[in-house]
Image (cartoon, rainbow, N blue to C red; front, top):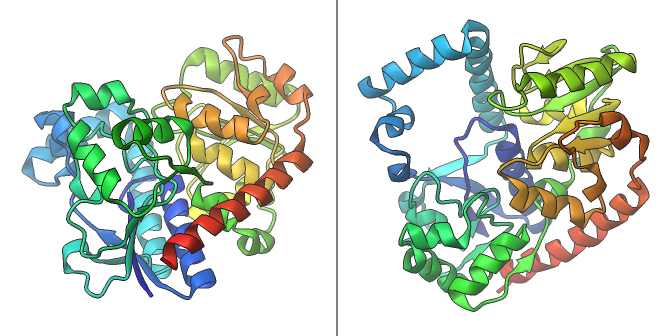
Amino acid sequence: MKIGIITHYDVHNHGAILQMNALIKVLRQKFNADAHALQFDKNYDFLGRELKAKYEIGIKSVGIYVKYLFDRGLKVFLFNVKKKGLFEEFKKRENLIGDYYSESENLDAVIIGSDEVFALHTGPTPVLFGHALPTDKVFAYAGCFGPTKIDDIKKLHCEAFVGSGLASMKGLAMRDQNSIDIAKELTGRDSKLVVDPVILYGYEEELKKLKDPKLPKYLLVYAYETRMNDPEETKKIVEYAHSHGLKVVCPGFYHGWADININTDPVELLRYFKYADCVVTDTFHGSVMSIITGRELAVKLRDNSNKLLNLLKEYGLENRVIDGSWNLDSIFAKKQDNEYVAKEVVRRREDSMAYLKEMIEL
């Protein structure tokens, strides 16, 4: 079978690349499919014309990147230039990216997802909602609306645009309850709750091969460079780590307050999770990577609480949420029930794989 995937293939984010690679690996290994992510042009109309220029490289975008350099500093700028190169090398090495969607021929199916494919904060991109794709078999796997809520869709006058796309799909599978509820309201259809592709694939073989990075004992922080920089937050993290004889290591994103920053490709990132003493994160995939590596974690909820708290509850980890006091001692004093987590991973993975098999064999 020839299967195309519509997902965020060109973003500067380890989690997005990991989930794309994971779904492609599952399709190739479990279903012997010729699977690639399809290229498409993303719509940025809801960002405003000035910010839109950031994503449409040209003369207008020069000023934005110059401002970025001055605001963030040369170290962050160079860190991200190198990271972009690592991502491009990884995608090429793994042969992840296929044709432009409208030029892709003889597709047997197109899968929408995973990640925040249904989020509307940038703009309305037709292919992300299954519109105008070159095959009759289109279905969603682990789709997510991210921060987008039903009221946002209504305010943006996108009910018909979103609802008609979802209604036309052969199957709907989401990775969080908010997305299931939105699909239900707009289409009247029930969606299947499935795991993110990173959990579906598990990266078990890759993890076996990843050796100890030979660092001092460390607390790993996984957070975007624009977050986890509040002085009160960083003070609490550093104090906890140093009082327990740990260094603060930030792989993937640069944080000037950390002891060690590491640039790494998506799979190599898992090495640093595997050997961490514990993890502090405020991201969905930071939590997912902790789950598949069995790390003790503490999670700060932000505007991603729709999907992130849902994920933690699925694996009995809701007591890992950091409150306003940032008392990491109290969180890490409570040991995770990793046996329960592992059983839930197996159960939910099998259930999700059954949905994927059913859709492919339609």
